[in-house]
Length: 331
Image (cartoon, rainbow, N blue to C red; front, top):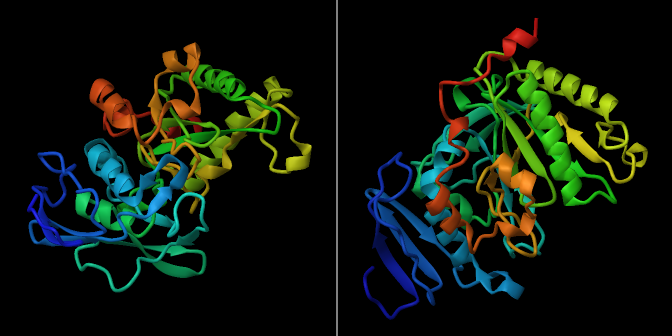
């Protein structure tokens, strides 16, 4: 890092491949400066308002958020690359007002790659997070969490996983959510479907199944709906699939299959969430769920150490092998 006494560093050069997982050496964003330009070869990213407190009570700044994403970029980037990104911007931090932004803002760097998709009645140019430069550019816009499309841009209606969002109904504990995750796991394994869990970073658990690309988004949604309703019938007091809040049994867990519908997004793996504890959507093992975990166990301040110890527990979602051929259940 070049030494300077000014508030604005004109350039910090970082080794980063154009589409690599991150830099070969850890990028350190200096403290006590408010603006910074980071250079990745011929790409420059200007980072602004670095001293702004995004979590005032925790004394976590925008700089800290950017540093977190730089640190986890080697494991994060493969999971969001080549997918349209819906931006959820928090210009005044986690407790402030937020707004959704789907179309890539202009002006923008010419190297930001675009995924043009039909969204409702319009064609929308979504940005894609392809490398560390574009990741920092998106986070600098005030995005705390990352919300990517389920399918890759080259065939946006054919996803490569199905998933279930387990959300506690009023009165349900997170322990109850873990219990339902285990019930769902057993059901999926009985169908010989590999499945993986992560905390939402908010209140629940996401369960994902890597599938062979082929079925349309609507077909994936229909399968998820059928399985969720089978589980509801088997455990009517514990599991609900209804979207009428008043009709949900108190203390139950919503097995939300509807997030598989076209155009829906969920917070990606390793996303920081705008919660009071700056929690992170984190891959967990089934043994951890069986032993018991808490959402607040996984936070911006400690997740990098977990990744260094355990690696990317979400790596099977990227593998071409051992993906489940869902077509066999759609006939």
